[in-house]
Length: 383
Ligand code: FNR
Image 1 (cartoon, rainbow, N blue to C red):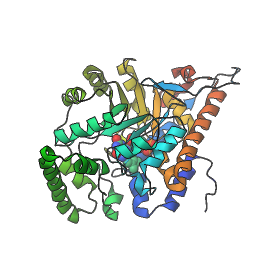
Image 2: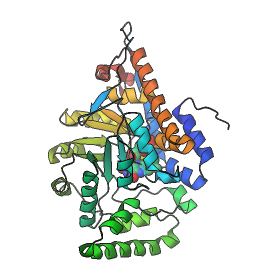
Image 3: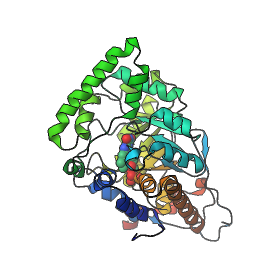
């Protein structure tokens, strides 16, 4: 191949481009509309400088950290991303094994192509489960309870997607959403007599949606519109917390106003995210709003971060601006597509090695030692 052995995460993207059918590569790589936010997530990191401290004993560097009470090897988690079977025949099961090998946490997507049970039984990684809430609240409740029964340790409520963003490559490619495995299994295994009406209702919803899809290019947006509850709002978080003992993280938050609301409704943490630029185009790059959110939260709950993390220096910058850990989305899929489990492990290892080197060169021997004074934002440079 042109790339050969990859030396950084961006080269994994090239390998994935070579390995995948164009339709699937475009689905993973793409963003909404002009893809301004997609690009800006990465560009904004380039405008932040690192301010190193010299003559610190950096002969030993400790990357380990704690997330919601779980010790992990580095502040780098696997973000929930859809449909890993389009990248690898065994899908999320492979990703989860890599997470376990790297001693980190994987958040399984609601839109996964393996069932949550398959992923649970395939590895001993700490797993979170991400959800969107269906119009049919009762179906959502059963899904949440299934995740809890199967040992998922936190619920990640993705709140930036009441509708699905317009990804024009998917429309052009006529990208078709495969069956949603978590719901399918729920329907076949748990559709006992008193659940038959659920089964019928859902099958009908899905059928109606599929009729709809035909003349709409991609069926992704249409399916979501038919099944997702776009009326779900802040007051409904309380309902969610009554149906589960799992801590709830809200993902997709970008402003101080919403950070204050999140603290108020009592969630266990938030993920500053713009869905990797796939939802609202012209939403700000996540690294430019992280500090605003961190300040509004004031240490009351942990703040996590995702969007455009491709280098150890990016992880360092997010930690300096107050994130407890970062999540990575696309790089994991690229690793999976290019080299399977080994590829995902390599992606995480590369990022860890880069972070360790960045810390050594900046005079930080532990994650806690990385402070706000270790970075200089664009605004600070201008003044
Ligand atoms: C996502 N993301 C996402 N988020 C979520 O909560 N549920 C999901 O099912 C998905 N699906 C999904 C598919 C694909 C192909 C991508 C690229 C992303 C968003 C994801 O969790 C995360 O916010 C971003 O991927 C982070 O940006 P980077 O790391 O991809 O730049």
